[in-house]
Image 1: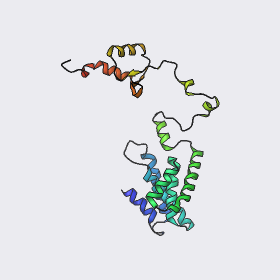
Image 2: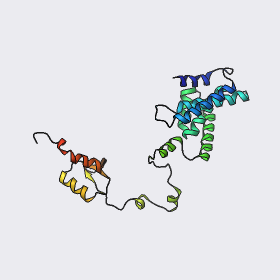
Image 3: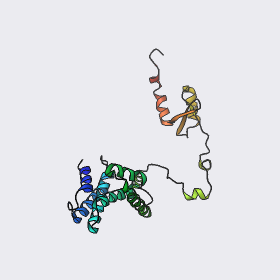
Image 4: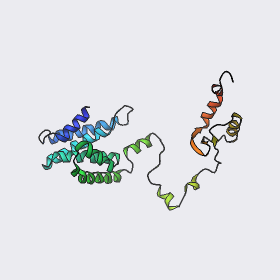
Length: 222
């Protein structure tokens, strides 16, 4: 793709292939466009644009300091991506293996990624993907439990509902199922067991749909 070609060219081009101004403008344009397009409902990724913008900024810094542009482009790309996505080791290995194949870059990549993640955590505790989940109201568990729960020594049993757990076997008679739905109408989900093995969950609405179309489960002979 053009983005991948541009990224490789930013990594491996000669020292005089780009000017500092062109690199800064290209990096800012990529970030500006990414801000508008990432939240849109279109098919696009975030890794390559961030790597491209980071490589532009890293190469610009290298040219301004008259240092090796290749190393700074790779480190800058990895650091910017790490600051947004908040991964360290896996990102370092991916960039190291896919883009360079040079093991001596492990130390500067790790140092840059850890620094980028630390600075990003000071600005915001959540990565861009966690922010997207919050905007879409999708529930998810944090890596660590809230400090209030830890200080109060709360356990899972302390916050679970006091309603009885109603289980359904994998094969159940219609009359028994109707009785359960009538007796526990406030339950939204029911765990399904095959013997003692948990095989999944089924919602009350799905059960009602199945009961309403129970004729589909019988042949004409029956």
